[in-house]
Image (cartoon, rainbow, N blue to C red; front, side, top):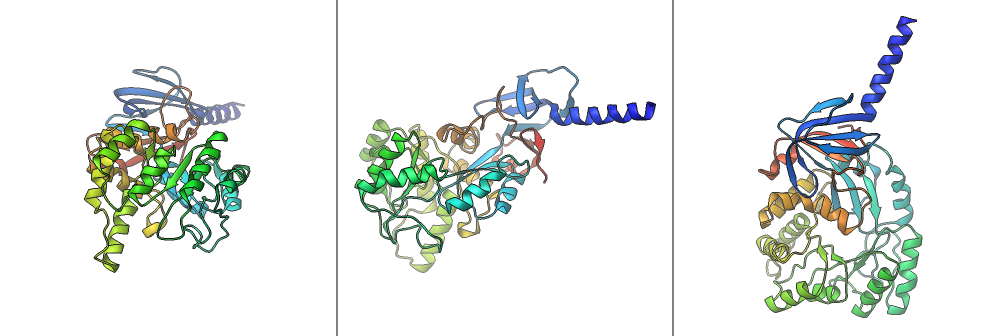
Length: 376
């Protein structure tokens, strides 16, 4: 009887420790601000208390010298395998936003959203593009459209197919959508209470789609610097965010210059300068890497994107927001991106202080998804 009682107590305490734990004395970046020597209580996968001290019979994790932050989000990916979700989760990237793919496959992969060791998956479904436009060259069936009259049906089909948001492609190096159709797509998306993001590469296209009330750009323009007057009018009269994809942009610049050195494009430093202009003007900057382009991975390469934002001139705190709370707010990710009471316990514990040195973000101690440790 004593042996059975002991085993029951052991089992009960183990289960209790898994469902309830407190991180004590940790530096907390909660998605908005930093608090030193703070404690965070997690119960049944939810953050239930944030305070200077937390008492109670909980498993205790010593956070001394460590930084606790929300799990990260990669705001621009193209995923083709659940192995990508594992790769991301191990790196503390627990949300992936897919910007173009096969809807049936995307819906199948969404089934892993409740699994501990895989990143959550949010999708645009098939991006809106013209026949023979960018996005049609990858070898999988891609629905297309041309006229504004087709926009309503196109948007409805994406939403019926499980899209969380709508992506529109406006790429002039292949057959581009007319601006009238892009505007109609944005309008129909807003009627469905979804957000519309647009792929651009040219500065003039960026100005037009943002004046047509696109919610965000999923690349920064890469052909030339935006004139001061146009820039000031844009940020004054419109509310939008930008996912600049600096890592893939800089790699793309290098590849294009090798093929054709006479091509006129923004250099890496010029792209960084445009991002800083946007940040200084109050435009939210979101972190995304556009894998698998240029063999960029789904996890640790996001650290490089965040570091590039710091190199552009964003403070470390703001660069961390770009991969956490700023994305959660822009895309309305439920109970994500913050460490606050009532939010899902998707968290990363880091050895050291990335708020002083952003490279420290790679020194991950533990990742939790819904309060459970992610296998690393």
